[in-house]
Length: 219
Image (cartoon, rainbow, N blue to C red; front, side, top):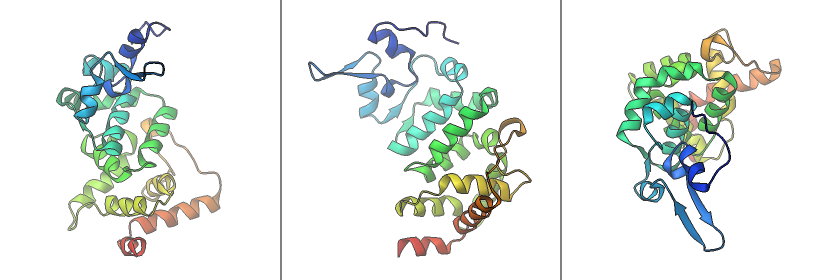
């Protein structure tokens, strides 16, 4: 863990940040971008690169793995090979992060534009096994079926319709496959507020898993 998390110069602050493209400064007097870490070049290359050794930076804050994949999904970036390898190698470190942070980052990833791609990346890199294991098992089984990941296609259709139901679907889909409405790391759970809300979310999940939604949304 970094021990110098204090105020300092802009350059010192830049090197504390997670990824190079997140460490750019803008000078409102000279109207120029200040780059201490090569973020401009990575931005032009659409590349997500950690500041410092990825093995160290991702282990000191495992939630950065989710952020990296979210950035790739949202902006159509790719992950620098060393960072990609580190995510694969240290994905189990996610289990050490607090439940509140994991829930927040997962909701952000699956509640944004690019959520379908985000879901695929979480599955591809194995992060769903730590975040939502039942959903990961479901998607792997689904990918082996003719037509592939039906859930991702339906999620993409909802994005096109600008539907804001992703978070509700996440809770409902997880609950439909287990005795817990939302089971996360180490079996801890976040329950829904009312029975009515639960019924509504289950209905959302049913629609998402229905291919007919695709034509209904596209019409």
